[in-house]
Amino acid sequence: MDYLSIKEILSQGQVGKEYEVKGWIRSFRNNQFVALSDGSTLQTFQLVLNPDKFDETSFKNLSIATSVSASGKLAESLGQGQKFELIVDKIVVLGHANSDEVQKTILQPKRHSLDFLREQAHLRFRTQLFGAVFRVRHHLAMAIHDFFDSRGFFYLHAPIITASDAEGAGEMFQVTSLDLEHLPQKDGRIDYEQDFFAKKASLSVSGQLQAELAAMGLGKVYTFGPTFRAENSNTSRHLAEFWMIEPEAAFMDLAGDMDLAEAMLKHCLSYALEKCADDIAFLDERLKQEESQKPMIERSKLNLIEKLKFCIEQPYQRLTYREAIDILMQSTPQKKGKFKYPVRGFGTDLQSEHERYLVETHFERPVILTDYPREIKAFYMRLNDDQETVAAMDILFPGIGEIVGGSQREERLEVLVEKMKSFDISEEEMSWYLDSRRFGTVPHAGFGLGFERLVMFVTGLTNIRDVIPFARTPKNCHF
Ligand code: ATP
Ligand code: MN
Image 1 (cartoon, rainbow, N blue to C red):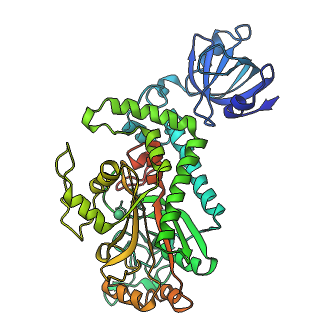
Image 2 (image 1 turned 135 degrees about the vertical axis):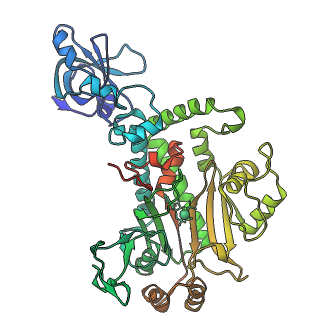
Image 3 (image 1 turned 30 degrees about the vertical axis):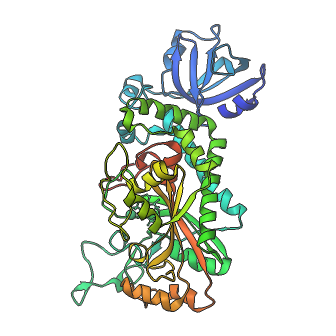
């Protein structure tokens, strides 16, 4: 007898053949129908207990959340919404679940709040919603690898521990093997010579600088790894531990960078729509119900699937930051009144309300803004000839604003050194990075994509804690 997952049986099962299935009981009704789920697909699989083979005592064991193995013949289903069912002759309970205790958990099959589900994050993989979310997350990760691999980019494992604080000083988690109760001192300060790395070390906030170095030999690379930020912000868009994708390519300029990022986003979204059609349809339905509870004015114009298509089917509007500022200064968003944060002209750091206005109201398509003021962007971005702006680009999406941030990098040694001085970054500490500009420097570019932000976009979930298996946020490192 074959053991197949529910997904496999539903796609390749043959009526009349015997199968064994394993999974968890979602529901049991009329002492005959069990809905079984095994995580392989959103769909549950109907088991029909053969009345000749079962009695009252066996029913008692088949409570919700119990794990079982069931065998029997596959039959065409008469019920609606399912193709097949299994006429079961034999059920073995693998792990019992006490119904009184199940009542207190999110395993009880009814609608629970996302907050309650988060409190039991260790059990939420069993729910339909989180099954869908984490299957989508998996496919998006595959889409990323698939995209870069097909374009000749090599997957680079950037270090997780770093001694460089060029980017994230202040929001870095320190890594130490020193005894915090008895810190070694030297001249009245902590003596890091005695620490594990003989210097102060932290968890990485970005793998970009290392990716740049690798690109200076391998040509095209991308990182996809965990990233850590000790920002005490507790927003619905920030985690202390998240995953980031950072491609970097030698001989690529800003225009190439934009083409790459636009193609990557479109690939990921199409890939998800194709591979997770039923999960996304389920998420779309859930979102529609949620939207219908809101007052008319707050409802979003597009549903989830329309929003994905909005970002797949149209070319992204490209314009400079300066042009965007002009548009924003001339416009007063209808209905909702003025912006919460006024746009005061060149130099204003755009907020997501501004970004969303450009995308959702002004252009009605995704937008790529380029050439930002040098002061509001990182030190490694390439200085433009106007001396005032840098070759940066941000991609803006409906509902969220910035999804990708990238730039052409400053490849000219003197200019970079000058920039580092103005940002107060130690040239000596970063001499390894500067070597890439000393020995055969080339124009190059890359960008960063927060993976969870992408998963949020595709699933329609609005709290970042719900798209990562176990969220790490301020004052919260449970499970
Ligand atoms: P934000 O303005 O949202 O804080 P950022 O400007 O600090 O973002 P970058 O330093 O450009 O972000 O990092 C690259 C990408 O990583 C961002 O575009 C975003 O998608 C993601 N990101 C940044 N911080 C976090 C975080 N704390 N949790 C999850 N994703 C994050
Ligand atoms: Mn930030």
